[in-house]
Length: 491
Image (cartoon, rainbow, N blue to C red; front, side, top):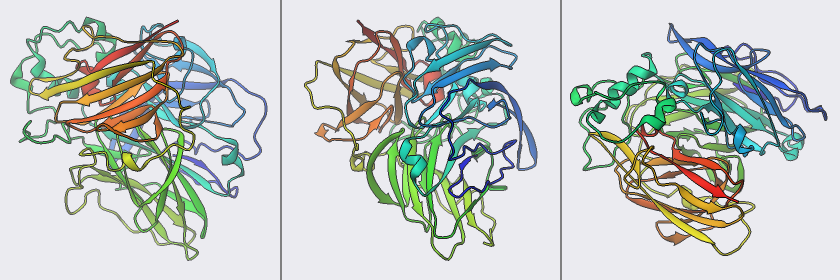
C-alpha cells in the first residue's frame, strides 16, 4: 500500500514492511534511490506464498517522487535469475526502457544498474518485462506527484491490483499455451519473454488444464482465460483487507493500478460517488460515477469525497465476467469495519464489451492540432485453441515493425478481429484516443488502450526518440505467445 497523508498522520499496512509516505516538506535536491528486485512471502488466507517484489532500501514497495525529483535509481537484482524492470508510463531514453536485449540485456543475478531520466508525472508503475516474473508479482507503484498534488487538501491512496496463482508461473503458462504444439512460428527471439520456457513439442493434451476456463467458445466474447487462486489489492485478499484510516469529511484521491497478468476489473466505490480525473497518469475532464473499468496495464485516478459522519467504505475491484472480488476499506476513526466475502452473489458484467466508458473520457490537455503524417493499421487476432495471439497474423519473431520518423504525427488503428479484448501498450510514448469504431473523439491521453472484440480504435501520437519501442498486448499469456511488435522510429 502506498499512502500519502493529507493531514500528517500515517496509516500502517500489514501488507508491507512499512507504508510508502512522502512528506509535504519536499526536498529540492535529487538523491539516488535504490530499488531491489527480490523475493517476499505473502500470507494469503493462511497460506504462505512466495512471490517477487520491488522494494526500496527501507523495505517499502515502489517509489514516490516529488515534482522536482529526477528518476535517479540504482536497481539491484537480488533474484537468482536474470531480470529487468520496465518503467511503465515513463518515457526514458530508449536504452533505459527495460526490455531484455532491446537494447540492454537483463541484469544477471546479483547485478546492479543505474537509471537517470526526467520522469513523467502521474500514476505509473514498474514491472518486469519477463511475463513469468510479472505473474509472480515483480511489480510496484511508481508515483510522480505534480505541484498541485502538494497543495491539494486530499489524502492519496494507491491500490495495486494483482491476480495470483499458487502454482509456478511457468506451469500456468505451459498449461494455457499447450495448444501451440506444432506451430511453425519462429519464437526464438522471444526466449527472454518466455522465462526460458521451451514451448517446442507441446501438444494439445494440456488444453483445459492450467486454469483454463471450461466451456469457452469462439462463438461469443471470451472474458477470462485463466482462473487464478487469489485476487489481490495491495498484496491482500478480502479475507484480511487493508484498512486505510481516513478523515471524516475529507477528500481522497485513489491511484488505482491494474498490475494483473490477465484480469480486467471494475473499480467499485460503493456508496461514495467518485470522479475519474486521470487515465494512465494524464488528467481528464472529470467523469462522475461509482464503477469504472480498468484493464491490465492501465491506471485510473478517482477522487472521492467522504461524508461528515464518517464510516467504513469498501473500495472493491470486481473481476469482470466472474464473481471474484478484492479491495481495500477506507475507514474513519471509530468506524465499525465488517467482514466482506471474496465473491459476489452473481457474475460481474463485462467491461471489455464496448467503448462506452472510453467515449466519456476527454483529455484536459489534448495533443496539438496538426495533420497526420503517417497512418498504419494493426490487425489483432488469435484464438483459444490453438492458443496463439498475433498482430497482423504474425507472432513476435515474424512480426512486421510499425515504422515512423521522429517528430511525425502518427495515427495507429487497432482493429481487433478476435473474441477477446486486448490492452495494447506502447513503450516510450503517450497517445491520444481520436476515434472509436470510426467515430472521431477528442479522447484521453494514454499509454495503454483496451480494444474490445470486433472493434477498432485509432490513436494519435508524435513519434519520439529514434529507436525500437515495444508495442504489445498487456495480457501476459497473449504477450508470451507472440502478441507483440515494435514501433521503429528513425531519425
